[in-house]
Length: 306
Picture 1 (cartoon, rainbow, N blue to C red):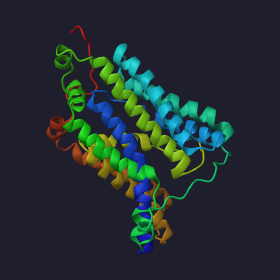
Picture 2: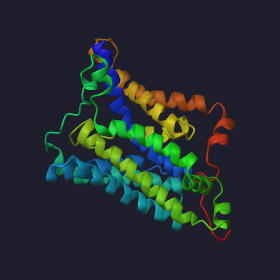
Picture 3: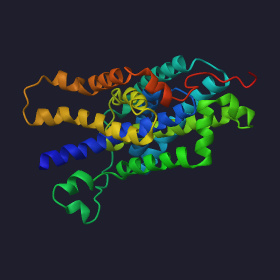
Picture 4: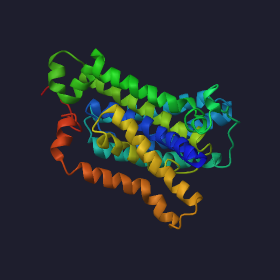
C-alpha cells in the first residue's frame, strides 16, 4: 500500500506541472489565440526561476522570476500575432525554438549549481495519517494551488462578467468589438496571463519537481500541456483531471521499473507521449464534438476594420 501511496503522490506532483501550463494555454485559447511556444516559455522560465533561487536563496522569488519570464515572452508573442497579425502557429513554433536555444545558452553556467534546502511541507495532523498522509497531505503548496486555480478559473469563465467577455472575444471578436470591447487588449492580457502560468510551471520544474538545471529538462511537457486543452475540450476541470492522468502515466514508468517489471526502459519512457497520441486520435474520431466546444475564432486573426 505504501508504494501505491507514493505513486499517487508522485502523480499529483507530476500532474501539477501539466495542469499549470495547460490552464495557462486554456486562457489563451478561450480568447481565440493558439500559442505553440509553451515549451520554450517553460524552459526560459525554468532557468530564470532556478538562477534566481540560486542567487537569492528564495523559492518565492524564483517562482516570481519564472512567471515574469513566461509573461515577457508571451507579451512579445502577443504583440506579434495580435497587433502585427503574424501567423500564430509559425510564431509559436519560433518562440518554442528560441526558448529552447536561449535557455540552453544561459543555463551553461548553472548545470552544476545547487539550490538551497527547501522546506518540507506537511499538513499538520493530516500528514501523519498512514497511507493517506504521504499520498495527499505532504505536497508543495503549488500542488494545492493548482486545484484552487482550477476552481477559480471555472468561476471566472462561467460565473463572472469578465469571463463572459473573454469567452465572447474567443467566440466572436467582431461582435465583441461592435459592443465596444477592446478585443486586442483583452487578447493580449489573456496571452500574458497564460504565459505567466506556463512560466510558473517551468519554475516549479526546476526548483521543486526536479531541483536542478539540465538542458531541455521540460522534456516535451509544454507540448503535452497543449494537447491537454484539446483533450479536455477547453474545460478547466477536465484539464486538471487530464493532467493527473498524464502525470500518472509518466510516474508509472518509474513504478514499474522499481517493482522489477521486465520491460525495456525506452518503451516505458514512451508512455506519456504514446498516451497523448492515442487520446488525441480517439477524440478526433468525432470532429463535431470538438467543433461544439472549441472557441469559434481559435487561431484566426482579428482585423478591427473588417
